[in-house]
View 1 (cartoon, rainbow, N blue to C red):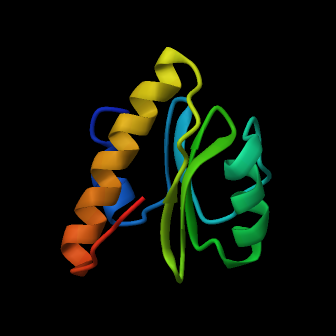
View 2 (view 1 turned 90 degrees about the horizontal axis):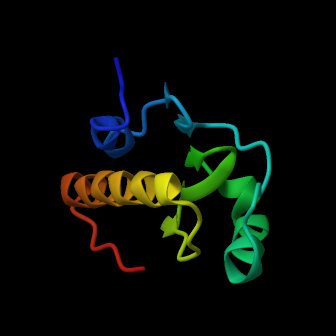
Length: 103
């Protein structure tokens, strides 16, 4: 069972999961609360997104053929925790894939 504490492993494997308000999905419903450059990037990438990490219905990171986009925008304290877990998962994915990830 995936929990918020161990979600980084599911993220690193691009597995779908739901851990309360944090989830990994292959179909992204929309931009949620994104704004500014992150929202623009989301809409530019939307058709190419293979996997996304969502917090309370807002994408906080997504994977396209070009690599990962991790949002720089800050939200609530809980979503900040979700972003930390997500970043660990993305780093693990990069290490496993032998890809240098820069964001």
